[in-house]
Amino acid sequence: MIRLVALRLLFGVLTLWAASAMIFGGTELLPGDLATAVLQNSATPENLAEMRSKLGLDRPPLVRYGEWLGRAAHGDLGVSLSNDRDVVEEISPRLWNTFLLALFAALIAVPLSICMGVLAAIYQGGIFDRAVNVITLLTISVPEYLIGYILVKYLSVQYDLFPSLANVSADTGFGDRLWLTFLPMVTLVLVVVAHMMRMTRASVLSIMASPYIEMAILKGVSKPRIVVLHALPNALAPIISVVALNLAYLITGVVVVEAVFVYPGLGQLMVDAVSKHDLPVVQGCGLIFAGAFILLNMIADVLAIMSNPRLRRPR
Amino acid sequence: MIGLLIITVNLVGALGAPVLAPFPEAEIVGDAWAEPSPAFWMGLDNLGRDIFSRLLFGARMSIGLSLMITALSFTIGIITGFAAAIAKGWVDTLLSRLVDLMLAMPTLIFAFVVLSALGTDLAVMVVTLAILDGVKVFRVARALAMNISALEYVEVARLRGEGLWWIITREVLPNAMLPLIAEFGLRFTFAFLFVAALSFLGLGVQPPAADWGSMVRDYRDVIALDVPAPLFPAAAIALMTIGVNFVVDWLAQINTRGLGDAK
Image 1 (tube, each protein chain N blue to C red):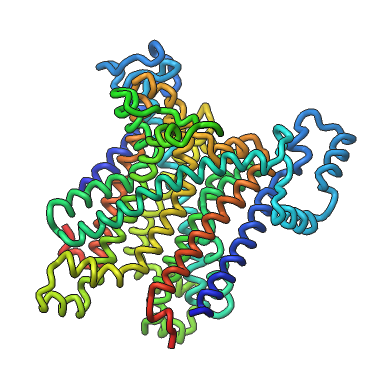
Image 2 (image 1 turned 135 degrees about the vertical axis):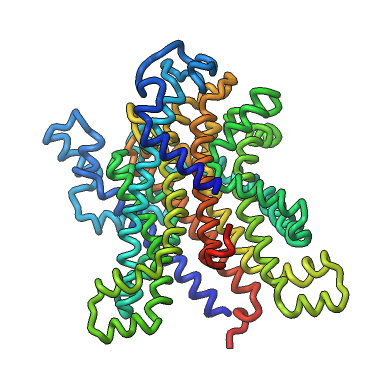
């Protein structure tokens, strides 16, 4: 098992490295170069050359990539091109906001979807199962912003229950923060619950077809007991990986939801930076998003290996 | 069947926009944010343009772009996927590892990085999304071709001395058609939602052109004033996706159970 886990960790590190190379390489695709992009119309040959040496563009890309990676590893992501602020300072409060929102959503979505999935599996074919099936099929196909705006229209405009803008700042208290981020959180939950719940149901049901479940039925064990004690532990690996996959999805889904509720998170920062061609900020945000995504996928695989006795002791 | 109906309505709306739309796309026909009325079914937008007409014209952009992306990603994905499965050896290993790497990274973030460097140009967006999507098609195409190329008739073709191209187009492709069509629907919804999301974030279709995503973006501020305008394009996006998903489910059923059982 240790070998499998170690291999998986190694692959994770390799992926992260490849992601960094692609993020750096992607921004190198820029027609012309960074200096012309920064100076735009005010570019004269002299200040272009000056800007190039200031940004270090006069050296080969591989050298610059090495330096960039080295500095990024030390927590230095460079300086924003649009307002000359340190990228790390720019990112950190927003990263915290995004992290809190995603955590808030995950804390509610994960237990909710697993409970619903198990319940739907227990009462397979019943009213609850069918109702949940239809609802989740709808929320899977619906884009985040439609859910967001419907929530805003009914819960905040019509009945004025929750604020429609999640304009938190650094000194917003914890209670206020929960209150302000309630609608974005619900939107995210609705988007990810559907998938997780369906997968939980499907994996529990697939286990229900195995011989030892039949044995338990013949012994006269009650249905809820079979599902929870016999089927669920064996369905754990696929459930864990689908949970992690959806949490990884949360990370990118958060970008759109932040835009709907004007939430000052990392996603908004990245979108702004993309439209302003602020490459250091794009690179920094990209690294963080990709890192979180890869990390979650890695954790999922490691947990899946550890929850499976056959993988735990490979022959 | 409902799915096919939704898709047909959408396609007719998109293709027939110039005929069906009561007003030209950019004409100002009344006051800004006029309420829905018999003349203007969905009301007027921020400049006083008819939202229903704009929705019909926006359908061309949304559906057309997604179709282009999906067609391109299938061309890339199927050719490389089939080639990898049939050629085997180092070609397969190399392509598969590369695809594994690409799949281990978030698509949206990647699209952001490329768009930030190359700018929000439609051609750039189409090619970027097609490549990102083609990676997923590769996986499916390779798995399909792996199964099919293990069958006797492919072996016979190989013994006959047919080339790679012949085997791909004449032996493998016709037998992989049905699952690939279902996959096409799935990838189409993905591309469709992706384009809409990018436009919604202001990084996709740029004004004066409009697709459904950018319409949601243009109208989003008035939701707080209780004007339902942004809900129409957003609902159109959802409806189209649901329609395609229904058809995909139906195709998947035919695929597993045969035509007779699927209704």
